[in-house]
Length: 164
Ligand code: ZN
Image (cartoon, rainbow, N blue to C red; front, side, top):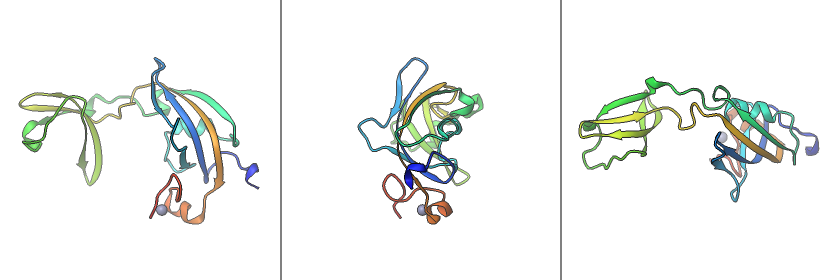
């Protein structure tokens, strides 16, 4: 029965969570929203998140802190790139703090604009949480075994997952 399932590989987990930075600022939370649903063991989550939640049962609450290596990694200063302003559409308004998506080798590569001048745009391709130590408070809402179809696709179907 489902009561026997705990957080483990190939389980579909739904959790409520709040993530805070080292200064206690909340950077993300499911509070007031649907729970976050993911397929355990398929690299959908940052590594430390699943590691810390393994074995948790429905209703269980855990709080843990992840150093950058187990979260979004260290910042890489080579990920900060100067792009000529002329590579952006002329009519496009570019501002510090904007998040845009470039295409690199056919893959989407999101970046933040950290500075703009008449000649260059300074783009930061690091994840905005790279280099940060993150604390998560997580409560397990629901656990079920993934279907064969979900396992072959590597993601969750239905509520909180892919619809296709
Ligand atoms: Zn699918």
